[in-house]
Length: 113
Image 1 (cartoon, rainbow, N blue to C red):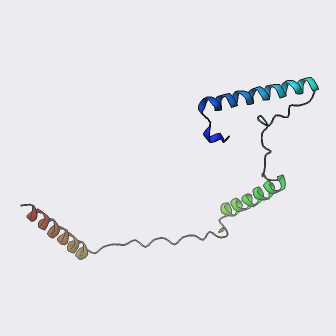
Image 2 (image 1 turned 60 degrees about the vertical axis):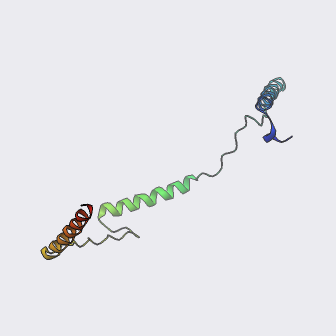
Image 3 (image 1 turned 60 degrees about the horizontal axis):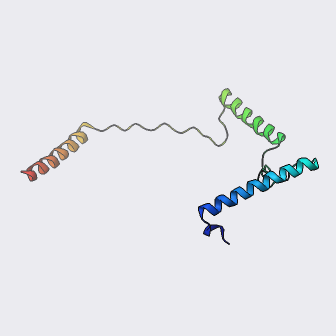
């Protein structure tokens, strides 16, 4: 029988049975004097991580980068960006844009009348 086709009451009954089995496994383990080998409560093994030597290499590299920054030396791969040139508009250009905007609004207002 497929798990997808089970009703809610059947799923609850299956969960109850699983809990009973886990309890019986624990009880048996206590009688036998061993740890319970329950698959329901077992946590997966931790994977990955980093060795102490790897952490030390990363920390040393970061300290070196900060030392260079504090000494005022440029750090590799990060060149300072040039300052942006400030753009100033001439008075004639401003007047031209203003006149065009006024003409546009006058046309819109005339169309509404």
